[in-house]
Amino acid sequence: MHTPYKQNHGRGKKPLTYNQRSLMKAYVYVSLKKSVLDPQGKTIHGALTKIGYKGLHDVRQGKYFEITLNGGISKEDARAEVERMAREVLTNPVIEEFRFSLED
Image 1 (cartoon, rainbow, N blue to C red):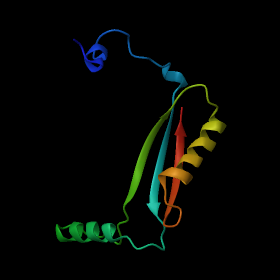
Image 2: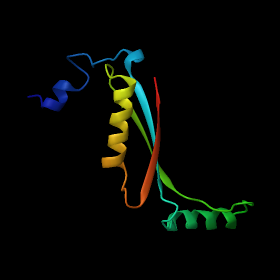
Image 3: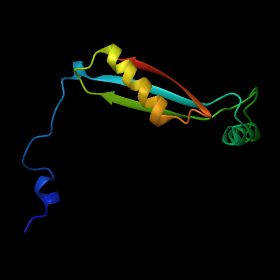
């Protein structure tokens, strides 16, 4: 008796493929607002200084998301969708800000 996992694992239907030219990538960078203290950044700054890196003034940590969008969406719609995702899901608007870029 086969389990569904085994039946679908490596056998049967071929995996879906996408036209590479229709895919779009979004790169979203999230960071704490300048007015928000960054204890993790301070800890990283201290560690880097302690092991000999010189000339450091400040270190701020953040998050990075790489999102692949399905084809069939215009660049304008993709831009709006990524901005909405970043604003509503990927960031905490009280303490974080974001920026993003799109690549065909």
